[in-house]
Length: 451
Image (cartoon, rainbow, N blue to C red):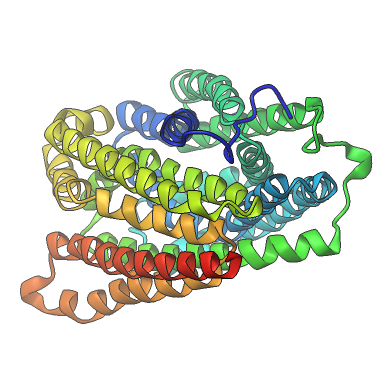
């Protein structure tokens, strides 16, 4: 094993889980800083229309990419299972199957994204005064999406092997480059949203090259060799079995967000601007919580592969308590300091800031419930069940939000942003409770099977 590989199947869990998760939290924050740097720079030097233009693309980009990023979850779980079981040949074949999948996925997304950006934006009802800028941003962004796919698949493999620090180091370097290029392209060259898109694309390519280099330098079964890259049928099947439902779940989750974004668009470009800034700020809280979901996936995956089912409940308790504390604290702090934080993105725009504060109030304070939901999803996927959390999430999150928007939200009295955001908390709560019950039932079955 590599020197920096965590021993997930041995010894006390609390310290290992926290040490494993912390670099993932920092990595997620750095990923968001890419987009935050875009919004801050355009907000200060280009105006609120440019902020709205960049923010309006987020839901569509997530919708298009989540299906394939879900496959990276499948690759990570497959590697974790094989490592836990000590099957080094399966680990190697999974690695050499995952990277080609990432490349093919990226090329496909580039074609769809470049050709269909403006059409997708129009279907969402994007305000006419920002749609041109949004389409420009999306086209350039999707030119670098292959690098994003390669990074996500490579990072999933490294984390499954216990290495959460390397992705952090790579994104630190890429993030610095992204900020520098943002300033050059926007302030010096006056490229507006095209400049921040070019900076993001360049930083994505850099992080992908670094992750490939790290995989090639490994000395264990996770080592990558270009000559061995081939899609192995058995490994592809397992990646799809776990990753495809995860991707479908993410995509359908994004569909509900697209519908919500369309509803926000109906309030005008100022509301879109405030919502975009607030959404970026709340993303830092989400990434901090979602890191525990990734930890839950890999720790349960390796211990499941090793047949150590008695450790799974301990992993569940530690991850749930940790994500609750993280989500509650960070969510509360973001709301308390909401006004100055929003001023970084949209300085001096009191109306847009007021819209942003509404979102932070209704989403960030109860945000820990979303973290609890994500951890239980990760626990179920870690033991090899991916269809179940997909079904539960589709019904509990996507279904509930869509019903809410087309019923309660359509009543004139309740047609407000406050009532729109309230659908998040209700959907998180329903889904978390259901998934927790399902995981405990599955855990009981695993223990009986072992006995």
